[in-house]
Amino acid sequence: MAHIRNRAAKLLDTGFQELIAPELIKVVYILGVVAYAVFVVVLVVGAFEESIGAGVLMLLLSPLHFALGFLAIRVCLEVLIVLFRMERHLGELSRIAQQQPHGEP
Image (cartoon, rainbow, N blue to C red; front, side, top):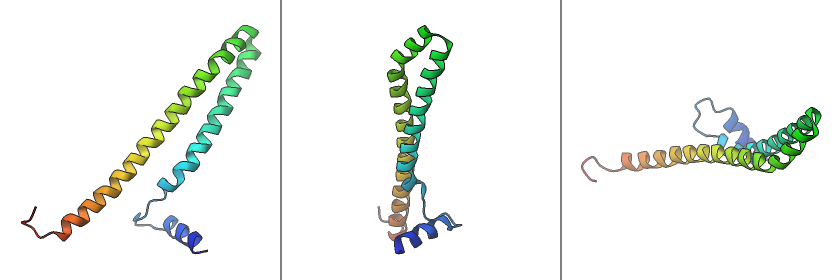
């Protein structure tokens, strides 16, 4: 119950002191991959509706298409994770710098 209360508190944090996006990345990743798989299937079906040749060609190219889309989703989400980690580490460095007297390295 406390876990749910903690997440609700993060959602209602108007000062944006707590970030919820890093926790949502896994869900976004799974939804993105599933949505892209459905998109590729729709492309293959649409190509078969055009002609048998286009359908066969799209069927042969669909694994490559899916792999490239999968890779693009993964890279974009990894960039977001890196940005969130940078924010966390910069916050830690800022706290350490504030604790040191001004004159010491």
